View 1 (cartoon, rainbow, N blue to C red):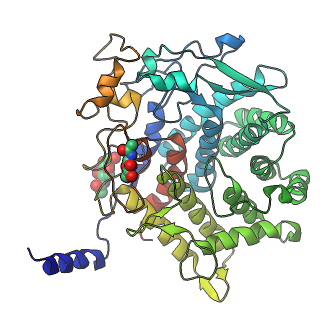
View 2: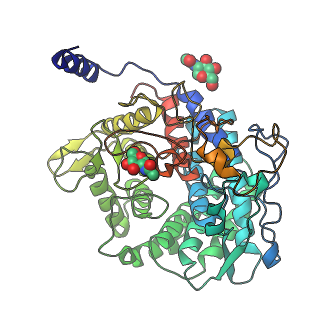
Length: 465
Ligand SMILES: *[C@@H]1O[C@H](CO)[C@@H](O)[C@H](O)[C@H]1NC(C)=O
Ligand SMILES: *[C@@H]1O[C@H](CO)[C@@H](O)[C@H](O)[C@H]1NC(C)=O
Protein backbone atom coordinates (compact mmCIF):
# COMPACT_ATOMS: atom_id res chain seq x y z
CA UNK A 1 0.00 0.00 0.00
CA UNK A 2 1.26 3.48 -0.81
CA UNK A 3 1.83 5.69 2.22
CA UNK A 4 -0.65 8.28 0.98
CA UNK A 5 -3.47 5.75 0.95
CA UNK A 6 -2.37 4.54 4.32
CA UNK A 7 -2.55 7.95 5.87
CA UNK A 8 -5.92 8.78 4.33
CA UNK A 9 -7.35 5.57 5.72
CA UNK A 10 -5.81 6.45 9.03
CA UNK A 11 -7.35 9.93 8.88
CA UNK A 12 -10.72 8.44 8.09
CA UNK A 13 -10.59 6.39 11.25
CA UNK A 14 -9.42 9.29 13.34
CA UNK A 15 -12.15 11.59 12.08
CA UNK A 16 -14.99 9.13 12.47
CA UNK A 17 -16.93 9.66 15.65
CA UNK A 18 -16.41 6.94 18.21
CA UNK A 19 -18.96 4.24 17.58
CA UNK A 20 -17.85 1.69 20.12
CA UNK A 21 -20.17 1.79 23.06
CA UNK A 22 -18.61 0.33 26.11
CA UNK A 23 -20.19 -2.06 28.53
CA UNK A 24 -19.81 0.19 31.56
CA UNK A 25 -21.88 -2.12 33.70
CA UNK A 26 -19.44 -4.92 33.06
CA UNK A 27 -16.44 -2.66 33.63
CA UNK A 28 -17.94 -1.33 36.87
CA UNK A 29 -18.48 -4.80 38.33
CA UNK A 30 -14.97 -5.78 37.32
CA UNK A 31 -13.37 -2.62 38.71
CA UNK A 32 -14.74 -3.58 42.13
CA UNK A 33 -14.03 -7.30 41.79
CA UNK A 34 -10.33 -6.47 41.34
CA UNK A 35 -10.08 -5.57 45.03
CA UNK A 36 -10.68 -9.22 45.94
CA UNK A 37 -7.49 -10.11 44.11
CA UNK A 38 -5.55 -7.70 46.33
CA UNK A 39 -6.87 -9.00 49.64
CA UNK A 40 -4.45 -9.96 52.35
CA UNK A 41 -5.26 -12.10 55.40
CA UNK A 42 -8.04 -14.65 55.78
CA UNK A 43 -10.31 -14.73 52.74
CA UNK A 44 -14.03 -15.04 53.42
CA UNK A 45 -16.31 -17.73 52.06
CA UNK A 46 -17.85 -15.19 49.63
CA UNK A 47 -14.49 -14.65 47.93
CA UNK A 48 -15.18 -14.71 44.19
CA UNK A 49 -11.61 -14.47 42.98
CA UNK A 50 -10.90 -18.01 44.05
CA UNK A 51 -7.38 -18.41 42.71
CA UNK A 52 -6.28 -16.32 45.69
CA UNK A 53 -5.94 -17.92 49.15
CA UNK A 54 -5.19 -16.82 52.73
CA UNK A 55 -1.89 -15.03 53.13
CA UNK A 56 0.22 -13.04 55.61
CA UNK A 57 -1.53 -14.47 58.66
CA UNK A 58 1.11 -13.36 61.16
CA UNK A 59 1.33 -9.71 60.17
CA UNK A 60 1.89 -7.51 63.21
CA UNK A 61 3.38 -10.24 65.38
CA UNK A 62 6.76 -8.53 65.77
CA UNK A 63 5.02 -5.67 67.58
CA UNK A 64 2.51 -7.87 69.38
CA UNK A 65 -0.25 -6.50 67.24
CA UNK A 66 -2.85 -7.88 64.87
CA UNK A 67 -2.27 -6.49 61.41
CA UNK A 68 -3.86 -9.32 59.47
CA UNK A 69 -5.95 -8.22 56.51
CA UNK A 70 -6.07 -5.14 54.32
CA UNK A 71 -4.82 -4.86 50.76
CA UNK A 72 -1.62 -5.34 48.85
CA UNK A 73 -1.73 -2.06 47.01
CA UNK A 74 -0.01 -3.19 43.81
CA UNK A 75 1.90 -6.11 42.30
CA UNK A 76 4.15 -6.80 45.27
CA UNK A 77 3.38 -8.05 48.77
CA UNK A 78 4.15 -5.12 51.05
CA UNK A 79 1.17 -3.45 52.72
CA UNK A 80 1.70 0.30 52.52
CA UNK A 81 -0.88 2.03 54.66
CA UNK A 82 -0.66 5.41 53.00
CA UNK A 83 -1.82 4.38 49.52
CA UNK A 84 -4.20 1.90 51.15
CA UNK A 85 -5.85 4.77 53.01
CA UNK A 86 -6.05 6.86 49.86
CA UNK A 87 -7.64 3.95 48.01
CA UNK A 88 -10.20 3.64 50.80
CA UNK A 89 -10.94 7.37 50.66
CA UNK A 90 -11.52 7.18 46.91
CA UNK A 91 -13.72 4.06 47.16
CA UNK A 92 -15.70 5.99 49.76
CA UNK A 93 -15.90 9.11 47.58
CA UNK A 94 -17.07 6.90 44.70
CA UNK A 95 -19.88 5.60 46.92
CA UNK A 96 -20.72 9.03 48.39
CA UNK A 97 -20.98 11.00 45.13
CA UNK A 98 -21.78 8.24 42.63
CA UNK A 99 -23.43 5.52 44.71
CA UNK A 100 -26.84 6.82 43.66
CA UNK A 101 -25.99 5.75 40.10
CA UNK A 102 -25.16 2.20 41.14
CA UNK A 103 -27.48 -0.77 41.38
CA UNK A 104 -27.98 -1.94 44.99
CA UNK A 105 -25.77 -4.96 44.21
CA UNK A 106 -22.93 -2.83 42.82
CA UNK A 107 -23.14 -0.37 45.71
CA UNK A 108 -23.04 -3.25 48.12
CA UNK A 109 -19.85 -4.61 46.50
CA UNK A 110 -18.33 -1.13 46.56
CA UNK A 111 -19.00 -0.94 50.30
CA UNK A 112 -17.64 -4.45 50.87
CA UNK A 113 -14.40 -3.45 49.13
CA UNK A 114 -14.27 -0.25 51.17
CA UNK A 115 -14.88 -2.03 54.43
CA UNK A 116 -12.08 -4.52 53.74
CA UNK A 117 -9.81 -1.47 53.74
CA UNK A 118 -11.32 0.44 56.67
CA UNK A 119 -11.53 -2.64 58.93
CA UNK A 120 -7.81 -2.97 58.47
CA UNK A 121 -7.07 0.74 58.85
CA UNK A 122 -8.92 0.67 62.18
CA UNK A 123 -6.30 -1.85 63.32
CA UNK A 124 -3.49 0.52 62.34
CA UNK A 125 -4.57 3.32 64.70
CA UNK A 126 -6.10 1.48 67.62
CA UNK A 127 -3.45 -0.85 68.99
CA UNK A 128 -0.56 1.25 70.17
CA UNK A 129 -0.84 4.39 72.25
CA UNK A 130 0.31 7.49 70.35
CA UNK A 131 1.67 5.37 67.55
CA UNK A 132 0.43 4.54 64.14
CA UNK A 133 1.42 1.63 61.91
CA UNK A 134 2.94 2.69 58.62
CA UNK A 135 3.55 -0.49 56.66
CA UNK A 136 4.04 -4.23 56.93
CA UNK A 137 6.79 -6.03 55.05
CA UNK A 138 10.34 -5.11 54.07
CA UNK A 139 10.44 -3.48 50.68
CA UNK A 140 13.94 -4.50 49.63
CA UNK A 141 13.60 -8.12 50.68
CA UNK A 142 10.12 -8.38 49.23
CA UNK A 143 11.37 -7.08 45.90
CA UNK A 144 14.18 -9.64 45.78
CA UNK A 145 11.56 -12.36 45.44
CA UNK A 146 8.87 -13.07 42.89
CA UNK A 147 6.45 -14.94 45.11
CA UNK A 148 2.73 -15.42 45.49
CA UNK A 149 1.47 -13.70 48.65
CA UNK A 150 0.40 -17.16 49.83
CA UNK A 151 4.03 -18.36 49.78
CA UNK A 152 5.78 -15.32 51.17
CA UNK A 153 9.01 -16.21 52.91
CA UNK A 154 10.33 -12.67 53.47
CA UNK A 155 10.11 -10.91 56.85
CA UNK A 156 6.73 -9.40 57.59
CA UNK A 157 8.05 -6.69 59.84
CA UNK A 158 5.46 -4.15 60.92
CA UNK A 159 6.61 -0.55 61.31
CA UNK A 160 5.07 2.02 63.58
CA UNK A 161 5.96 5.65 64.16
CA UNK A 162 5.15 8.04 66.93
CA UNK A 163 2.24 10.15 65.94
CA UNK A 164 3.85 13.53 66.48
CA UNK A 165 6.47 12.72 63.85
CA UNK A 166 6.30 12.25 60.10
CA UNK A 167 3.20 10.10 60.34
CA UNK A 168 1.14 13.28 60.31
CA UNK A 169 0.55 12.90 56.58
CA UNK A 170 -0.54 9.30 57.12
CA UNK A 171 -2.77 10.40 59.99
CA UNK A 172 -4.41 12.95 57.70
CA UNK A 173 -4.98 10.35 55.02
CA UNK A 174 -6.44 7.83 57.48
CA UNK A 175 -8.66 10.57 58.92
CA UNK A 176 -9.93 11.25 55.42
CA UNK A 177 -10.56 7.54 54.79
CA UNK A 178 -12.54 7.12 58.02
CA UNK A 179 -14.53 10.33 57.63
CA UNK A 180 -15.38 9.64 53.98
CA UNK A 181 -16.27 6.04 54.76
CA UNK A 182 -18.47 7.14 57.65
CA UNK A 183 -20.58 9.10 55.14
CA UNK A 184 -20.69 6.12 52.78
CA UNK A 185 -21.87 3.75 55.54
CA UNK A 186 -24.22 6.12 57.34
CA UNK A 187 -27.41 4.80 55.76
CA UNK A 188 -26.38 1.18 55.56
CA UNK A 189 -24.57 0.53 58.82
CA UNK A 190 -24.98 3.47 61.20
CA UNK A 191 -23.06 1.94 64.07
CA UNK A 192 -20.06 1.17 61.86
CA UNK A 193 -20.29 4.70 60.48
CA UNK A 194 -20.20 6.03 64.06
CA UNK A 195 -17.17 3.96 64.88
CA UNK A 196 -15.36 5.22 61.80
CA UNK A 197 -16.19 8.82 62.64
CA UNK A 198 -15.02 8.41 66.21
CA UNK A 199 -11.71 7.07 64.97
CA UNK A 200 -11.46 9.83 62.37
CA UNK A 201 -11.74 12.44 65.12
CA UNK A 202 -9.19 10.63 67.24
CA UNK A 203 -6.74 10.26 64.37
CA UNK A 204 -7.12 13.88 63.32
CA UNK A 205 -6.04 15.07 66.75
CA UNK A 206 -2.57 13.92 65.88
CA UNK A 207 -1.01 17.24 65.05
CA UNK A 208 0.57 17.88 61.69
CA UNK A 209 0.53 19.97 58.57
CA UNK A 210 0.32 19.76 54.82
CA UNK A 211 -2.18 18.72 52.20
CA UNK A 212 -3.17 15.46 53.92
CA UNK A 213 -4.24 17.28 57.07
CA UNK A 214 -6.42 19.62 55.02
CA UNK A 215 -7.74 16.59 53.18
CA UNK A 216 -8.64 15.02 56.54
CA UNK A 217 -10.22 18.27 57.73
CA UNK A 218 -12.23 18.63 54.52
CA UNK A 219 -13.71 15.15 54.92
CA UNK A 220 -14.40 15.75 58.61
CA UNK A 221 -16.20 18.96 57.70
CA UNK A 222 -18.34 17.04 55.24
CA UNK A 223 -18.99 14.20 57.67
CA UNK A 224 -19.81 16.33 60.72
CA UNK A 225 -20.79 19.76 59.39
CA UNK A 226 -18.87 21.23 62.32
CA UNK A 227 -17.68 24.81 62.06
CA UNK A 228 -14.35 23.99 63.69
CA UNK A 229 -13.22 22.07 60.58
CA UNK A 230 -14.27 24.88 58.32
CA UNK A 231 -12.21 27.20 60.46
CA UNK A 232 -9.32 24.77 60.30
CA UNK A 233 -9.54 24.79 56.50
CA UNK A 234 -9.55 28.58 56.40
CA UNK A 235 -6.77 29.02 58.96
CA UNK A 236 -4.47 26.42 57.48
CA UNK A 237 -4.93 26.90 53.77
CA UNK A 238 -1.52 28.57 53.64
CA UNK A 239 0.05 25.23 54.53
CA UNK A 240 -0.54 24.12 50.95
CA UNK A 241 2.42 26.41 50.28
CA UNK A 242 3.10 28.69 47.38
CA UNK A 243 5.06 26.18 45.37
CA UNK A 244 2.50 23.40 45.41
CA UNK A 245 1.30 22.15 42.09
CA UNK A 246 -2.41 22.90 42.27
CA UNK A 247 -3.19 20.80 39.24
CA UNK A 248 -2.44 17.38 40.62
CA UNK A 249 -4.31 14.67 42.39
CA UNK A 250 -3.09 11.27 43.43
CA UNK A 251 -2.06 9.35 46.48
CA UNK A 252 0.97 11.60 46.99
CA UNK A 253 -0.70 14.94 46.29
CA UNK A 254 -4.14 15.81 47.60
CA UNK A 255 -4.29 19.48 46.61
CA UNK A 256 -6.71 19.09 43.71
CA UNK A 257 -8.92 16.80 45.78
CA UNK A 258 -9.05 19.19 48.73
CA UNK A 259 -10.01 22.13 46.53
CA UNK A 260 -12.76 20.27 44.70
CA UNK A 261 -14.14 18.73 47.87
CA UNK A 262 -14.36 22.07 49.66
CA UNK A 263 -15.71 23.76 46.52
CA UNK A 264 -18.90 21.73 46.93
CA UNK A 265 -19.75 23.68 50.02
CA UNK A 266 -18.85 26.97 48.39
CA UNK A 267 -21.37 26.14 45.68
CA UNK A 268 -24.10 25.25 48.15
CA UNK A 269 -23.64 28.00 50.71
CA UNK A 270 -22.30 31.46 50.54
CA UNK A 271 -19.28 31.15 52.80
CA UNK A 272 -16.80 33.79 51.63
CA UNK A 273 -13.97 32.42 53.76
CA UNK A 274 -13.82 29.15 51.87
CA UNK A 275 -14.22 30.73 48.43
CA UNK A 276 -10.44 30.56 47.77
CA UNK A 277 -10.75 26.76 47.64
CA UNK A 278 -13.38 27.03 44.99
CA UNK A 279 -11.38 29.61 43.04
CA UNK A 280 -8.42 27.26 42.95
CA UNK A 281 -10.62 24.33 41.97
CA UNK A 282 -12.02 26.44 39.14
CA UNK A 283 -8.52 27.32 37.91
CA UNK A 284 -7.67 23.67 37.99
CA UNK A 285 -10.77 22.76 35.96
CA UNK A 286 -9.90 25.41 33.39
CA UNK A 287 -6.46 23.85 33.03
CA UNK A 288 -8.05 20.69 31.56
CA UNK A 289 -9.20 22.71 28.55
CA UNK A 290 -6.55 23.73 26.03
CA UNK A 291 -8.73 26.56 24.68
CA UNK A 292 -8.43 28.49 27.93
CA UNK A 293 -5.64 30.85 28.93
CA UNK A 294 -3.22 29.88 31.67
CA UNK A 295 -1.47 26.65 32.59
CA UNK A 296 -2.73 23.45 31.02
CA UNK A 297 -2.80 19.75 31.70
CA UNK A 298 -0.99 17.54 29.21
CA UNK A 299 -2.56 15.09 26.76
CA UNK A 300 -1.06 12.34 24.62
CA UNK A 301 -1.62 12.61 20.85
CA UNK A 302 -4.37 10.00 21.32
CA UNK A 303 -6.16 12.25 23.84
CA UNK A 304 -5.14 10.70 27.14
CA UNK A 305 -4.82 13.10 30.05
CA UNK A 306 -1.54 12.45 31.81
CA UNK A 307 1.05 13.75 34.18
CA UNK A 308 4.63 13.07 33.09
CA UNK A 309 6.10 10.16 34.98
CA UNK A 310 5.46 6.47 35.25
CA UNK A 311 2.16 4.58 35.68
CA UNK A 312 0.37 7.41 33.95
CA UNK A 313 -3.16 6.08 34.40
CA UNK A 314 -2.88 6.73 38.14
CA UNK A 315 -3.22 10.42 37.51
CA UNK A 316 -5.54 10.09 34.53
CA UNK A 317 -8.18 8.33 36.57
CA UNK A 318 -7.88 10.47 39.70
CA UNK A 319 -7.95 13.70 37.64
CA UNK A 320 -10.93 12.46 35.62
CA UNK A 321 -12.75 11.71 38.84
CA UNK A 322 -12.34 15.34 39.93
CA UNK A 323 -13.54 16.57 36.55
CA UNK A 324 -16.71 14.53 36.78
CA UNK A 325 -17.28 15.47 40.40
CA UNK A 326 -16.88 19.17 39.70
CA UNK A 327 -19.25 18.89 36.74
CA UNK A 328 -21.85 17.60 39.19
CA UNK A 329 -21.36 20.58 41.51
CA UNK A 330 -21.70 22.99 38.57
CA UNK A 331 -24.88 21.31 37.31
CA UNK A 332 -26.51 21.20 40.73
CA UNK A 333 -26.09 24.94 41.08
CA UNK A 334 -26.95 25.62 37.40
CA UNK A 335 -23.57 27.14 36.74
CA UNK A 336 -20.91 26.99 34.10
CA UNK A 337 -17.18 26.99 34.42
CA UNK A 338 -15.70 30.46 33.94
CA UNK A 339 -12.22 30.54 32.50
CA UNK A 340 -11.46 34.17 31.74
CA UNK A 341 -13.63 35.01 28.75
CA UNK A 342 -14.34 31.35 28.01
CA UNK A 343 -17.42 29.70 29.51
CA UNK A 344 -17.54 25.93 29.67
CA UNK A 345 -20.70 23.92 30.18
CA UNK A 346 -20.59 21.06 32.72
CA UNK A 347 -21.44 18.66 29.87
CA UNK A 348 -18.02 19.43 28.39
CA UNK A 349 -16.35 18.39 31.63
CA UNK A 350 -18.30 15.14 31.58
CA UNK A 351 -17.53 14.53 27.95
CA UNK A 352 -13.83 14.92 28.64
CA UNK A 353 -14.00 12.56 31.61
CA UNK A 354 -15.86 10.01 29.49
CA UNK A 355 -13.25 10.29 26.77
CA UNK A 356 -10.65 9.24 29.37
CA UNK A 357 -12.72 6.28 30.54
CA UNK A 358 -13.29 5.15 26.95
CA UNK A 359 -9.61 5.48 26.16
CA UNK A 360 -8.79 3.20 29.09
CA UNK A 361 -11.39 0.66 28.03
CA UNK A 362 -10.06 0.41 24.49
CA UNK A 363 -10.70 3.54 22.37
CA UNK A 364 -7.02 4.24 21.93
CA UNK A 365 -4.36 3.93 19.23
CA UNK A 366 -3.31 0.48 20.55
CA UNK A 367 -6.97 -0.66 20.61
CA UNK A 368 -6.04 -2.12 23.97
CA UNK A 369 -8.17 -2.34 27.07
CA UNK A 370 -6.02 -1.32 30.01
CA UNK A 371 -8.52 -3.05 32.26
CA UNK A 372 -7.59 -6.70 32.65
CA UNK A 373 -10.36 -9.10 31.71
CA UNK A 374 -12.43 -6.46 29.93
CA UNK A 375 -13.01 -7.16 26.22
CA UNK A 376 -10.63 -9.44 24.34
CA UNK A 377 -7.52 -7.36 23.93
CA UNK A 378 -5.85 -6.58 27.23
CA UNK A 379 -2.35 -7.12 28.70
CA UNK A 380 -1.69 -10.81 29.33
CA UNK A 381 1.55 -10.50 31.28
CA UNK A 382 1.23 -8.07 34.12
CA UNK A 383 3.61 -6.99 36.83
CA UNK A 384 1.77 -8.84 39.56
CA UNK A 385 3.18 -11.71 41.56
CA UNK A 386 -0.12 -13.47 42.24
CA UNK A 387 -1.56 -13.21 38.73
CA UNK A 388 1.61 -14.43 37.01
CA UNK A 389 2.16 -17.46 39.27
CA UNK A 390 0.05 -20.61 39.22
CA UNK A 391 -2.69 -20.64 41.82
CA UNK A 392 -2.38 -22.63 45.03
CA UNK A 393 -5.47 -24.45 43.75
CA UNK A 394 -3.51 -26.00 40.88
CA UNK A 395 0.00 -25.79 42.29
CA UNK A 396 -0.08 -26.26 46.07
CA UNK A 397 3.68 -26.68 46.36
CA UNK A 398 5.52 -23.62 47.68
CA UNK A 399 7.24 -21.50 45.05
CA UNK A 400 10.42 -20.25 46.65
CA UNK A 401 11.70 -16.69 46.58
CA UNK A 402 14.13 -16.97 43.67
CA UNK A 403 12.31 -19.79 41.89
CA UNK A 404 9.62 -17.26 41.05
CA UNK A 405 11.94 -15.33 38.74
CA UNK A 406 11.54 -18.16 36.20
CA UNK A 407 7.87 -17.38 36.19
CA UNK A 408 8.63 -13.69 35.87
CA UNK A 409 10.84 -14.34 32.83
CA UNK A 410 8.46 -16.80 31.23
CA UNK A 411 6.89 -15.78 27.91
CA UNK A 412 3.68 -17.56 28.92
CA UNK A 413 0.60 -15.47 29.67
CA UNK A 414 -0.59 -15.09 33.25
CA UNK A 415 -2.39 -18.21 34.49
CA UNK A 416 -4.75 -16.09 36.61
CA UNK A 417 -6.77 -13.21 35.26
CA UNK A 418 -6.78 -10.36 37.77
CA UNK A 419 -10.19 -9.31 36.52
CA UNK A 420 -10.86 -5.59 36.62
CA UNK A 421 -7.32 -4.45 37.38
CA UNK A 422 -6.39 -1.25 35.59
CA UNK A 423 -2.66 -1.26 34.85
CA UNK A 424 -0.20 1.63 34.66
CA UNK A 425 -0.96 2.10 30.99
CA UNK A 426 0.72 3.41 27.86
CA UNK A 427 3.59 5.76 27.36
CA UNK A 428 3.13 9.46 26.61
CA UNK A 429 3.04 8.66 22.88
CA UNK A 430 0.15 6.19 23.38
CA UNK A 431 2.49 3.23 22.86
CA UNK A 432 2.31 0.15 24.99
CA UNK A 433 4.95 -2.54 24.81
CA UNK A 434 3.85 -4.56 27.82
CA UNK A 435 5.58 -7.35 29.66
CA UNK A 436 5.94 -8.30 33.30
CA UNK A 437 9.24 -6.47 33.59
CA UNK A 438 7.66 -3.13 32.76
CA UNK A 439 6.04 -2.13 36.02
CA UNK A 440 5.27 1.35 34.73
CA UNK A 441 3.02 -0.11 32.04
CA UNK A 442 1.66 -3.30 33.55
CA UNK A 443 1.44 -2.92 37.30
CA UNK A 444 -2.08 -2.49 38.66
CA UNK A 445 -2.77 -0.53 41.85
CA UNK A 446 -5.74 -0.14 44.16
CA UNK A 447 -5.49 3.64 43.82
CA UNK A 448 -6.08 3.53 40.07
CA UNK A 449 -9.18 1.40 40.49
CA UNK A 450 -10.76 3.18 43.46
CA UNK A 451 -11.66 6.42 41.63
CA UNK A 452 -12.45 4.43 38.47
CA UNK A 453 -15.38 2.87 40.34
CA UNK A 454 -17.10 6.25 40.64
CA UNK A 455 -16.48 7.19 37.01
CA UNK A 456 -17.84 3.88 35.70
CA UNK A 457 -20.89 4.10 37.95
CA UNK A 458 -21.75 7.50 36.51
CA UNK A 459 -21.24 6.58 32.85
CA UNK A 460 -23.08 3.30 33.25
CA UNK A 461 -26.13 5.27 34.35
CA UNK A 462 -25.59 8.16 31.89
CA UNK A 463 -24.42 6.65 28.62
CA UNK A 464 -25.21 9.55 26.36
CA UNK A 465 -22.40 11.94 27.37
C1 LIG B 1 -22.40 -6.36 29.49
O1 LIG B 1 -21.65 -7.30 30.22
C2 LIG B 1 -22.46 -8.20 31.01
C3 LIG B 1 -21.51 -9.06 31.79
O2 LIG B 1 -21.04 -8.37 32.88
C4 LIG B 1 -23.34 -9.00 30.09
O3 LIG B 1 -24.18 -9.84 30.87
C5 LIG B 1 -24.20 -8.07 29.26
O4 LIG B 1 -24.94 -8.81 28.33
C6 LIG B 1 -23.31 -7.07 28.51
N1 LIG B 1 -24.17 -6.08 27.86
C7 LIG B 1 -24.06 -5.81 26.57
C8 LIG B 1 -25.00 -4.78 26.05
O5 LIG B 1 -23.27 -6.38 25.84
C1 LIG C 1 8.55 0.34 29.63
O1 LIG C 1 7.83 0.81 28.52
C2 LIG C 1 8.08 2.15 28.18
C3 LIG C 1 7.17 2.51 27.03
O2 LIG C 1 5.86 2.50 27.43
C4 LIG C 1 9.52 2.37 27.84
O3 LIG C 1 9.74 3.72 27.61
C5 LIG C 1 10.37 1.86 28.99
O4 LIG C 1 11.72 1.93 28.61
C6 LIG C 1 10.03 0.43 29.32
N1 LIG C 1 10.77 0.02 30.50
C7 LIG C 1 11.30 -1.19 30.60
C8 LIG C 1 11.99 -1.48 31.91
O5 LIG C 1 11.23 -2.02 29.73
